[in-house]
Structures are given as C-alpha cells and as structure tokens.
Image (cartoon, rainbow, N blue to C red; front, top):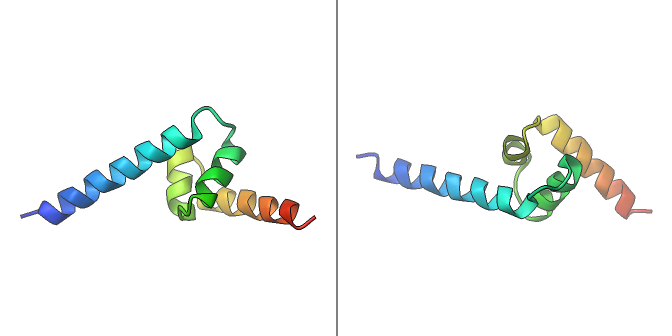
Length: 69
C-alpha cells in the first residue's frame, strides 16, 4: 500500500539532496554543467537549480560548443 511509491519519493529526495550538495554555491550555469555531466536529465536539473528545462538545454549546448573549439 504505497510502499513502492514511498520508496520512489524517498529516492527522488535523496537524488535532489545529493545534486544540491554536488553543486554547492556554484553559479547556475556551472551547476547545470556539473549535473549534466553527472547524467541527470534536463527536467531534474531545472528543478534542482530553479530554472526551466529550456535554460538547461541552452547552457549544456553552450558548454558543448565550447568543448568543440
């Protein structure tokens, strides 16, 4: 009765807390790149850093373009 859902919610909270700890006091764009490299999806990154998935996509795209130079 809700056991799997409760576990999923707890896991989601742990992931978010770990992500926040990982990015610490970094600037938003830097935090987005760190979380993207950690394999988090754009929606979750946006949620963690307090922005939109479109902003996350743009920041990751800029970072990829910098890497191609």
